[in-house]
Length: 181
Image 1 (cartoon, rainbow, N blue to C red):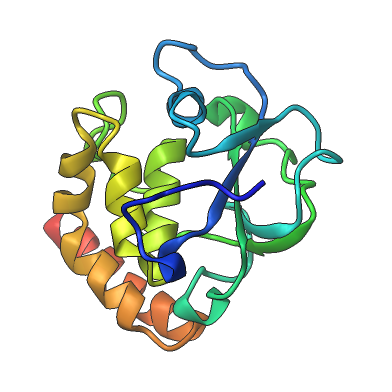
Image 2: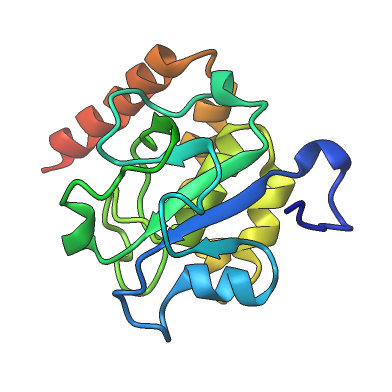
């Protein structure tokens, strides 16, 4: 299903799909919010979820601009406890997001603990769709915080050529965080 984003150029459209578990707080569920604004489609089974780039924190390859060109971006929406299990059986090219920090009120400042909307926004930005990323985050009062906190790394990841370059950039941030401790 092609989503309509009238304010975005045609090249900035990627369909957002969520393999939805429904095991978190519905009041704080960013996937449900995006679906309510007709910005993402929720799927209750792996079979119903279309093929695309699957955002998977357990993937062996990092998301990079080399993954651009897919029509579908898929996230798994579940609690972090469920995410630790092997829940990522969705068809597609599995990619991990690089080091970024959460801007949402629940996990603010925690690295790698992004909610679904933040994961989509990060992926969209890395894949060359910053306007779409901003549109996604505009639906949350704290959305600008995520984009501001991660402005430099998102820009650098989006300028990378491939996964190995994204991983090298990520390592710089991990080394800085380690030196701060």
